[in-house]
Amino acid sequence: MASPSSLPLAAPPDVDAGIARRRVLDLVFQAVALLVLLAVLAALAALVYSILHDGLGRLSWAFLTSYTSRRASQSGVFPALAGSVFIIMLTAAIALPVGVAAAIYLEEYGTRSRIARLIELNIANLAAVPSIIYGLLGLGLFVRVLGFGGSILAGASTLALLVLPVVILSTREALRTVPMSLREGSYALGATKWQTIWYQVLPVALPGILTGLILALSRAIGETAPLITIGALTYVPFLPDSVWSPFTVLPIQIFNWVSRPQVEFAQNAAAAIIVLLVLLLTMNATAIWLRDRFQKRRSS
Amino acid sequence: MSAGSPLVPSLAARTRGGGAAVADRPVKIDVEHLNFYYGQKRALEDISIKLRANVVSAFIGPSGCGKSTFLRTLNRMNDIIAGTRVDGTVLIDNVNIYDPKIDVVGLRRRVGMVFQKSNPFPKTIFENVAYGLRINGMATSKAEVHERVEASLRAAALWEEVKDRLHDSALALSGGQQQRLCIARALAVKPKVLLMDEPASALDPIATQHIEELIYDLKKDYTIVIVTHNMQQAARVSDYTAFFWLGRLVEYDRTEKIFTAPAEKLTEDYVTGRFG
Picture 1: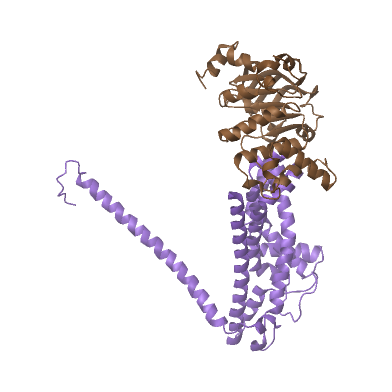
Picture 2 (picture 1 turned 135 degrees about the vertical axis):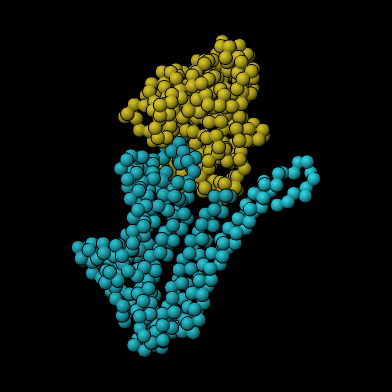
């Protein structure tokens, strides 16, 4: 770079050159990052577009309320949708009390011992275990040893195990955000530890706990492998009527339809994916709504 | 100047006139050779002090001198901080509160505390005061709870301001009102001793004046120990003052004496503003 500058304070030319090179690198990096982002978004958009294009036409009230049929045009997702909703509610009912209790113990009662740290580390590891492993555990424990069979209860128990590490971790985070001053205020009035946790800490932490739970359940609702492992059905001509009922869920129904050669069933699969997506987005929206309400309450 | 009855606070007592009566009060809290440790670090060194019933005792000293830590040893609030340790004895009504047989929950009900930063529960005004009654099983009927809540809010000079909005959130109150609510909450469970950790440090002068008048009125029923950064405040509200420095109790005497004729050079330097 030539230096036409006559200013006495102008930097030597080699320093200017260095700045220019760094500026260029800066721009290049920015461009690459943007490109990667656009590529990812484009892939997602293409996916959503193709599903909407294939499935939107099949989506109707009849599709939501019909049982599966040999004829694609008369098939619906009713039993799978009911199974998914039923199983996710039961999963929440199992995972919430167990996960919250475990988190309360670890966060409020547990001491900072070596064993406590080992348990913490392992919970974090469990959150990363592939879901099929939980399926095998569910098959061995719930289906065989406890004799639940391929029932909704076995499926929900297995999914509860699957989401438990995430629920415990997010509950601990929520408990940690409750200010110490609140606990001290309660203790200073002669409250026991349990009274303090139950009346003061949990109500404040609840939206955070529920947010974590819902996000964990969003993962569970898309699970197929562990439920197939424990023996969920692929053809269910009835609604589940108790926790002992055999069942199917949306991802399994989708998997089943996708593997058929006929184009009509592929359209059914796309429509079912839309149903699953809407269910998922609704759950995530609820989580965001809860979190916002939580932040508003704390800032007021 | 007449000493005045301790139950009828008068202007005479408000000045330093009631000295003889104050010095005659029985010892409520008797601390002997108390040491306190955060891990390896000794934060309080060999504190011995006798605090009298129905008087206001103020702890003063520069930041980090241990006055708040000492206050928190009097209701064992430091127990909830991991890695702390206490030795020595703290007798309240002749019972050692560090005796292993002592139930810390019962102790804290009898020794109430108000914190530096007001910490109302994120509930209604009414529920803030009723909470202590409920958890301690101190009021059985709804009418009784209501009566005690009203009495406590009146005692904390807050009733007139909040009686029409008892079921609004406590977080909507002003800072000074929140602090008085915390005092009302502490009074509701009828403690014998009230510990106050810089209760007015975050408040404006008007709210501070409210709190100080309240402290003055409360001492006929309670033994009050207040930590303060503000020496004028200590001089205004307290009967006795203890000066802490680097974890040690340097001097403890009648407030008047501490501020006019301290025995220690260190105390004099501090109260005259030469350091701290």
